[in-house]
Image 1 (cartoon, helix red, strand yellow):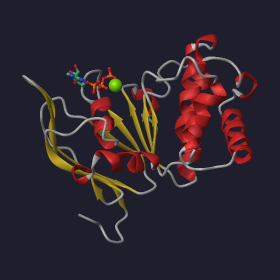
Image 2 (cartoon, protein in one colour):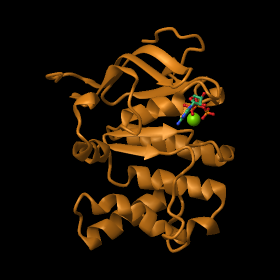
Image 3 (tube, rainbow, N blue to C red):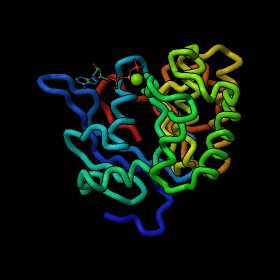
Length: 226
Ligand SMILES: Nc1ncnc2c1ncn2[C@@H]1O[C@H](COP(=O)(O)OP(=O)(O)OP(=O)(O)O)[C@@H](O)[C@H]1O
Ligand SMILES: [Mg+2]
């Protein structure tokens, strides 16, 4: 189904995710996210934040219900179409998923290979984004030569280097001290100001207690949210 002229970029309708035999993570979730929105997805550990994000980039399938991303019904995508969906989405993984045998530079540059920038453009873009997360000086290091917080910032750089329309941030400040947390929040705000839709999953209520942004709390019982 296509939403002509719609300002909705992510739409979940009646989405249930169950891990057999008996773990119903959430059921019958309805959620619409507007293009350009910055939304917090919250709730305690184990409630299903990561699972919900994984559904959005087709790392998992819902047990029932439908999800549309940028007008495309995810259930209609073939395996060969999934990479096209993922080009629109930058994911900051909770566990970073950096390649330990690649440098910081290459970890970030790999996301650009698929979009066909030449080497010069690509190098410039990677260094800009590394600068943005305060890691330009460590471009030639390997992930294991970095602190946890630095690795987290590489993961952020990698997620945003190809300027995706949607950024899914899974506890992107989980390992960071207050100062770095503030920097990451500013970075997310900047991305959002440039037009990206940001879905920010966290169980840390300090990050959103004073926000004017929409905060969606995943339900403890199996109720609907909207
Ligand atoms: N691949 C899987 N197989 C079976 N159960 C899973 C799988 N992935 C997640 N779960 C279960 O789904 C539930 C939600 O997990 P999820 O990782 O989405 O929670 P979360 O809200 O992101 O938690 P945290 O704040 O700790 O990151 C948990 O009960 C977890 O055990
Ligand atoms: Mg999680």
